[in-house]
Length: 79
Image (cartoon, rainbow, N blue to C red):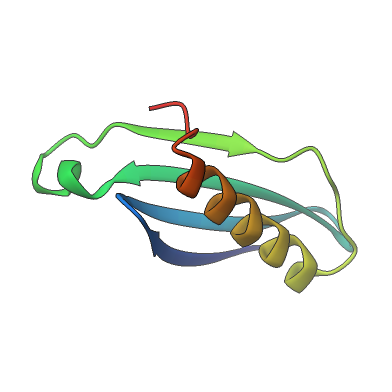
């Protein structure tokens, strides 16, 4: 099962995802896209897989959102 939350932060659209890798184990990841690239057919993006694992989907999503906001504000997303 997968859960995704999309946010806008600075110049980025960010997909914060939590996926259930095993029953009751949730892993977060974050996908960054530049807003300016959204008009193109092919959009360059960078996914960050967070090393933490959580027993709660909500905790995994929350961690992904906090991570995404911090990276976007610092301009350190890898694009």
